[in-house]
Amino acid sequence: MLPIPDGPRPPLHFLPPARRPWVLTIGRWGSWLQVRMLGIRSVETTGGRHLVELYRGLQEGRARFIIAFRHPSTDDGPLVFRLMCGITPKEAARLGVRLAWAPKGYFLYGRDVPEWAGRWLAWFFPRLGALSVFPGQLDAQSLTAIRRCLTEAPHPLAVAPEGQVTYHNEKVAALEPGTAQLAFWCAEDLRRQGRAEEVFVLPVCFSYHYRESDWKGLDRLLTRIERECGLPPLPSAPDVKPYVRVMRAVRHLLDRAEAHYARFHGVSFRQRGDDSVEALQRRVDAVVEAALGEAERFFRVTPRGDWMQRVLAVRHAGLSWIHREDIASIDALAPLDRALADRVAAESWLRLRHMELADVMEYVRLDYLSPDSGIDRYVETVTTLWDLVNRLKGGNISGRGTPFRRSARIEIGEPIPVAKFKESYQANRRRGVAELTAEILSVFRQAAEPGREGA
Image (cartoon, rainbow, N blue to C red; front, side, top):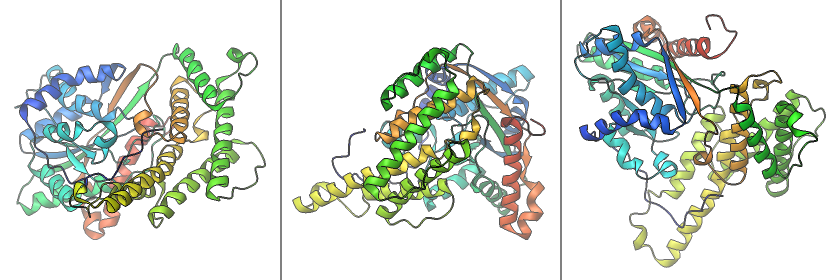
């Protein structure tokens, strides 16, 4: 389990971008090295001409655009930075397009990310020009900075419409409406300033792919999961299909999670009847509800929206109880007040473990895997089960990791002109945002989900 905080922490204030050219230069030249260090062997890009043309349009004052990227992995951030700063210039050279200045870009990051990924990022990200946002809400300072970036910055902004990492190459999560709304706000702000640039949303799909030789490594990872769970080896384990071992691990993890929440948190689960995939999925969903409900009760958060929205609301509440806005100086507290604040921080951290469990378990989709699935889906699923063990033990996303080297594929779709939805947005803003969001979702699904028309 991760160490419990030894007391309250200073509030997570908005970090304004403070871009430094020398930091950006280091980041740009080092982006290829970071991608390699993440275990990505190679990167294949299709549709790069769309990105090059939009960069040229932006530099010539004809266009503004948002890069809307799929978010199936924790490694997408470095890859989108590499796409903007490294891949685009090479693609422009290949196409014979001369850009006025080197392509770069901006991106959003959760203000809490440095708390689990490394405090140094609180210094590094702003100096790259990244924009901090708070989990579960968009504060006024962040929104002002984002809107200014969209209309005034010399480079595009990259946003993940799925809201957070989704762990599935071939299954697109529901999209949040924020990306579409930002695009409309950008268009409105430009018109207000008397400017004629056209606004686009550029859909970008990331996916990660493994080799057939990784089945051996998958077997070793399954063995680690079985060892952590205390599961005895199956007879002739090397000859047992991975699907059998995966489903046995799922059943065991469900048994342990249900027993924990029933005994220590008073949750009642339905009697287990059949052992079908549908029945197991209902059990997964019930544990997610139990974990979220326990966290929501402690933090006095009213359940609203889907699971992701509820996870973000709990995360925001929990962080606000650890990073205390109401304490001007922690060191100035009286001993009793400090002790009480220490208790609140520790108890909040422990209750956030329920949120961390729900945050990964909501992506355990058992219909995503079948006995005949390929290596990519098996690696994704087994990695998520390993992460599920990590979360049950009190871990968070920082302990997830990726077990094997892999190749990355970047599919860049046709730019979506925001003007296409202008009339709909003017008639009904919600409808306009919904229609643009649906268009982005359609492009993502055609690229990511096999069997869909246009895939």
